[in-house]
Structure formats: structure tokens, C-alpha cells
Length: 380
Image (cartoon, rainbow, N blue to C red):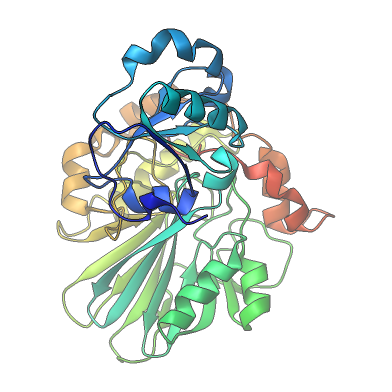
């Protein structure tokens, strides 16, 4: 349904009710037209999968808490599937609020992607953001060719983004063995004929070209443009950074789950927390802390508190990360204590997702899509 909210959302109290598509909400989140978000799910549902920035008032409590809602700003109401929120939205419109129901609720929000783009010398990097999970994947293109890094199972997103820029997908890369979402490397390679590149220090049960520390994968269009691989064990044994070196001094590093703009990767997922924490500390100090200040860091995830703005990549400079991320300032023993003291429950369905991404699950990964619902849980 085409909504009046597909453009800028106006302010001012004017009682009305509308249905709002999840894609339309994504276009105004992080802008001056961002609406007030009201989540009418129960608290345990919100804890399992929160919507960043939303006020939680369960549907049964809404009538007694209307004073907590703004009268001068549009309100978007959400729930799991859009049914409870529709009831709430109509009631709020009747009470004089300018309100919209998020059609399909969190289930629909879970399928929303958007893009942001940046240039690195002669190379274009497109960041695809899977908004509900905080997952980031990338197309790195030059000339008529592109690499895809950390793709999800929604392979059509990458095919569409590449086609829009006249790129052929030639290589597909995962920066590590993913634990909280299903990888689309095999599906995307099958759809495009691209070569799969993975670090064999993580275990996979299907054919791929191995990535080794120091490898360079050239891109056409400029002989000086390439992607360099940097082995950074710690989050997983095969974690790998990908350094995009342009024809100028510009540099961007795709850091996977080794470091984020708001934290570092978890070292505890393999039940060897202290060992992996020591590896992660070494990796961070040898290959992240040492980056030039103006290097753009592009991670594979972002947390609930990270702002996401239309057209603006989720990124930070290496200099900013050194100044703001406490873990990067710790010596090895302090880092190990910090990391191992922050162990939290593993992502739901962790074992099944890992097995599927290793290629060792009998069912098609498409049959397992329901297992990956929820936010990113790979940050320490």
C-alpha cells in the first residue's frame, strides 16, 4: 500500500491512521523526519528482539499510559506481525494521535535492506545493511567486476545492486564462519558462477578457494586496485580482514566480526574463551590498532545503539576507534579478563546455524531461515 509517509513525515498534531511499509520506515529512520516508535509487544518479546529507539508499552497497558506519547510528532506502532499494533494504532488515532501501523511488524522489518556507498580510490564499496539484524555486507567493485563480502541468503539483493552498477560478481567471500545468521556464499556463487573464497582455519564442508594471510585479489579497472587478506584469529580461528587499497592513499578495511564501530568480536563462541581472547588481542594490536588514523573501518555488524542514516555508511576511522573503544587500549591480561568476564548466552540456534554455514546440515539452508530471526549477538 502506498503511504502518505513515503516522503518526508510532517510534524504537528493531526489525528490520522495509516499503514506504513517497513521499507518506508527505513527511509526516514535516522533523519529529521524520524517518527516516534511505540512497541506494543510484551517485554519478553522485546528483550529477545528489540527495535532500536522504541518505547515499549504492552498493548494491555496502553490506555493507562497515553501521556507518555508525544502529541506533536507522528507515532509508528509495531508488534511481532502487525496485528496488535493495528489495534493500538486505530485506538490512538481515535484518541487524537497522528499514527501509523508498521505493516507486518518485526517480521516485515526483518526483511528490510538499504544501501550506502563510498569511494576508495578507483574502487566503489557498497554497504548493504540488513536493518533488523544489524548485519552489514558489501559489494566491492571496479570496472565491470565486483566481489561480494559476507552475503546473506537474500542473494537477489546483491544481484540487483551489482546489476544497477554494471558489475559482474566474480568472487564471493565470507570474513569468517558466521554464528548468528545464514551465509549466502554458496547460493550467490551458484547464481553467478563466482568463485568462493574462505579461510580454511574455519571448517567448511564444501569446495572453495583458500584465503591465506597476505593474499591479494585484483579488481579490474585499475592495476593498482586490489583486496589484501589479513588473518585475524580471535572471534573465530579463520577471521580475516579485507583491506581495500585504492590507487591513492585512501584505504578501507572490511573487518568482519574482529572489530566493530562500537566494540570487538566475541572470543567465547567456540568454548575456548581465554585462548581466543589472547588471539584476538594480538590480532587487534597487530592489524587494527596499527592502521593509519584515516583508514575507514567497515564492520560486518553494528549494535542497537549505533545510528544508521540513509545513504551514510556505518563506519568509523581507525583513529576514532583507538580513541573510543576501551578494549583497544588494554594490555593482554586486562583484555583477557575483560573479554572473558563478558560472556553472554550464545546466539539462539547457534549450533544449527554453524552447521548449515559449514555445509554440514542435511536440510537446505532456506528451510532454516526462521532460526536466524533476531539481532546481532556476535559483539563482546
